[in-house]
Amino acid sequence: MARAFLGLLALLVVTGCSQNNLSFLDPHGPVAAAQRTHFWIVVALTLVVVLPVIVLTPVLVWKYRYGGESTYRPRWSFSKRLEYLIWGVPFLIVAILGYFLWQQTYSLDPYKPLPSDQKPLHVQVVGYDWKWLFIYPEQNIATVNELVFPAERPLELELTSDTVMQSFFVPALGSQIYAMHGMVTRLHLLADHPGTYRGENTQYNGERFHEQHFTAKAVTEAAFDDFIAGARRHGHTLDRPTYQVLDGRNTVRELARALGEDGQTEALRFSATPDDLFSAIVAGTPGEALAPGPVSMAAQQTPLAFQRVATGVDGPVAAAATLTPLHAADDAMVSLPPAGSPRHHQQGETP
Image (cartoon, rainbow, N blue to C red; front, side):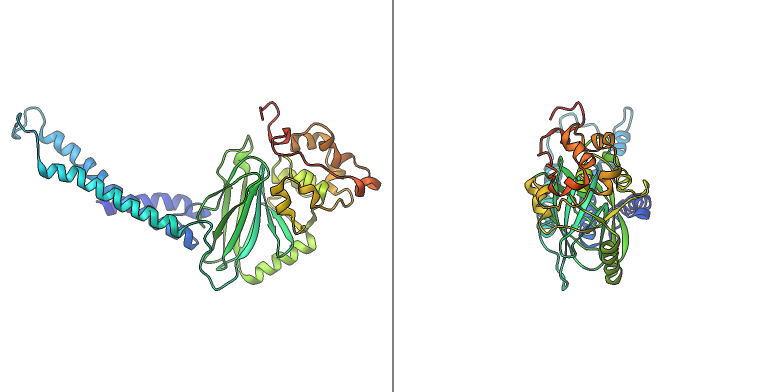
């Protein structure tokens, strides 16, 4: 009966999630596979307690019903066998669960590199409202809401947030981890084979929280090289005015429209990034790492009203990217507001 129940539960969950690679119950990497194994061990051990209760409750109700023929023992008070059963079984289950929990916590430590004969791909991740920036420092490119990496090669992620705390999660690959402003966390993942997976922020961060998801693509080495080359050839320039819009409270579609692309775009690419951009974001000074450059398309085409909505700032910072004249762009320094400033809060919210 327990086996049938587990099979039915697995069928219901996997059929509902596997089509879009949404669940660790349909793993596509060693971390998610280990998490799935641990999950079923916990379920099986829990059923040792749950199933007897479910089965014996109606049996005992029927056996000792009013008018039944079972033996009536009003003076009964103690049974050594029942005491051993009631206390011993839960004790053993908790001990076994504790052992597996300790073992899995150690082996699945997100900071622990995954065993492989290949060099990990290093990617720096920044969470914004309401999108993700992926910086490839070794390849000198960046993307928004698109994480592309070779299959069968470890993925080493450094994460931070340029707004409130966020939660980075690719269920099919495993291990959720938090990203926090001014701090760096790390995560190691690996995909067993090429595939496309959904990634998301599972930490509520405002009214557009439900739109903050991204696509994780495990590809062949050749396809990854093509992706890098394409980003270098056709990517946008990530200068200060463009970053000002990227740093605002907007979705990737709104950002794409500000950069002159189709408003249905689900991902963006940048052709070059400074070596110290991630460190500058963690330190709260990203403007110092970016070249002033000419006023970007975002600065030329984005109206002030959008800047105010996108950045949450009604004033000089919001207007800087829009109103800076071309001849003064090289001398203009777009000062980004620090953490805790009005940009990090909805209008009317208390910081």
